[in-house]
Image 1 (cartoon, rainbow, N blue to C red):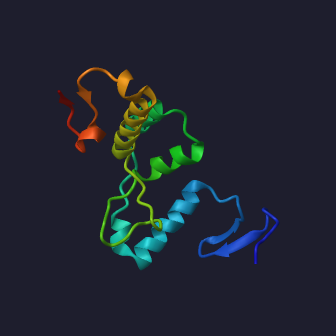
Image 2 (cartoon, rainbow, N blue to C red):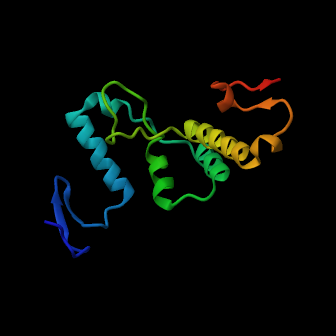
Length: 138
């Protein structure tokens, strides 16, 4: 049954929480605790918190982040890919280094698409064109 009152409390192992009012830190702590008890190999794939300098670099590069995302990265720097399974179904939260790499790759790809083939710089082939992380010059 769906609760319509967002202030209604819900029971859980650590006590009760207001529905819809549980913060990122509390929610993540529950996820980690559950994994440690029921899926220890998955729990081991959770990376330690991201450093403040890495967090600032990623946010500066990608634009402003919501407080919840910033908080989550202060709790865990993504997860490792593991055969044990992902912490979240069908989703492997990326470490900040991968966030930066993916963001850069997609910006480069979108700039290439937006410029069209005649607008790109002469002789430069992008990483995604070559299927590699190395840059090539023609």
